[in-house]
Length: 172
Image (cartoon, rainbow, N blue to C red; front, side, top):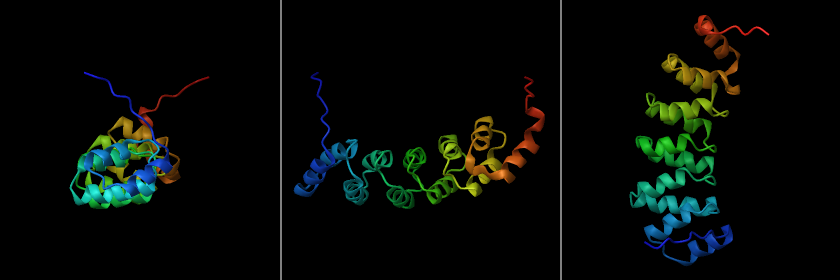
């Protein structure tokens, strides 16, 4: 088997390639995988992938570091019931608070979705409170929420009250 090198194009080259060709799925996938692919190209690739039900390309776009919060929101609206896509969106640092809330509402029992949301410093307090309410027996969820600056003093107090017997006192 011959190993193929992967070339990275500049974002300007990607825009030019996108505008000048009628992309097939394979070419769209290669552009979406490029770390330099700008959101101006990711968005129309997403639209084409959505129209052709190509969830593999959509998952790649959902994981892309250049995918904007607005694009992730659009994807979450269109594919909220698709677990794999939501899992990928939940791990993207560009996720918007409203998107976190939607994804958690659709998949409240899966730790591969609620743990990344609990760790995300942009998670809304109400979503963190809901995750805590549903998963206060999950040590990873509780710790993630307690470390999250968005938790707020009321939620932190509730966590303390619920788990004070489990806390270790550290003496210096």
